[in-house]
Amino acid sequence: MTTQHAPVSVLGLGSMGIALARALLRAGVPTTVWNRTSERARPLAGEGARVAPGLEAAVAASDLVIVCLRDHDAVREVLGGLDPSAYEGRVVVNLSSSTPGEGRASAAWAADQGITYLNGAIMVPTMLIGDPEALILYSGNQVAFDRAQDRLRPLAGLTTHLGSDPGQAALYDVAMLEIFFASMTSFLHATAMVTASGITAREFLPFAQQMAALGGTVMEGLAADVDVHQFDGTEDTLEMELAALDHIVHTSDEAGLDGTLARHMRDLVRRAVDAGHGADAFSRVVEMVRHQP
Ligand SMILES: NC(=O)c1ccc[n+]([C@@H]2O[C@H](COP(=O)([O-])OP(=O)(O)OC[C@H]3O[C@@H](n4cnc5c(N)ncnc54)[C@H](OP(=O)(O)O)[C@@H]3O)[C@@H](O)[C@H]2O)c1
Image (cartoon, helix red, strand yellow):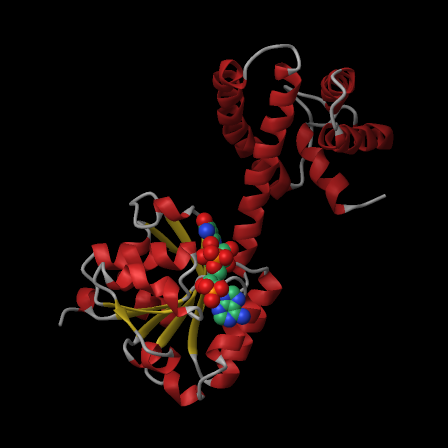
C-alpha cells in the first residue's frame, strides 16, 4: 500500500466532516467514518466509506485520525472516551475550530494522554474542501505534521504549518475571520444605505468589489507601518479620513439604519485625532485598538 492510499479515519460527520470524508474518497483514500449520531454516516456508506461500528473501531482502522466536531470540548470528550493506548502509533489531527487558548489546552491534554496530536483550522467552506485553492492551517507538533501532511493534501491544496505553538492555527483563523466578517458586515451596511435610495444591491456590487480589492492592496502599507511602529501620514491623514467617516455616519443616520459599525470606525479615528495624531496615517488606529480609553 502506498502512503497516498494508507487509510484515514474521520470522526465527526457534520457538514464539514462529510465534506472531508468525501474529499478523501474522491482521492481514492480508504476512508473509515464515525459519528455520534450514526445515521449521518449512511450516505457515505453508499459512496465507498467504511462506517465504523463504534469509536474504537474507527480509531483502530487508520494511523491517521481526523476529528472535526463542533468544538474542542466535544473533541476532548470524544477522544477521552477511549483508553489512551487506542491512539498508539496514530496521528490525531483536530480540524475543529477554536480559540488559540483552546487549541493550546487541547494540545496539552493530548500530550498528557500520550496522543500524537496536531491542531488545524479550516479556512474554507465545505464546498471548497478538496479544491487546489482551499486553505487549511496547521500548528503545533511538527513531527505529527511531517508524518501527516502528504495525506492531508486531498483536503486542501494549500496546506501550511505555522509553527510549534498549537494555538497559532486558531489565532490566524480568528484573525482572518474578523477580516471576513467585518468586510461582509460593512458590505451589508453599505448595501442598506444604497438600497435605501432605490439602488439594487446588484447594481452596487461591482463598486463594492472594487473597494474590497483596494483594501487588500492598502493592507500592505498598514502592515509595514505596524511592524516598524511608524504612522506618519503622507498620502492620507486621519484628519481627512475623520471627515469621510463622519459622512458615512450621517448618511447611515439619514437612512434610519443601525450605524454602530460606522460609528465605531469613526470613533477610533476621532480618538486618535483628539490625542494629537491628526496628521498620522490610518495605520495609527492599531494603537487606538491596543490602548483602550
Ligand atoms: N461548515 C463549515 O463551512 C466550516 C468551515 C470551517 C470550519 N468549520 C469547523 O468545522 C467544525 C465542524 O463544523 P460542521 O459544520 O461540520 O458542524 P456541524 O454540522 O454542526 O456538526 C457538528 C459535529 O459535531 C458533533 N458533535 C457536537 N457535539 C458533540 C459531542 N459532545 N460529542 C460528539 N460529537 C459531537 C456532531 O455530532 P452529531 O451529528 O451527533 O450531533 C457533528 O458531527 C466546527 O468546529 C466548525 O467551526 C466548519
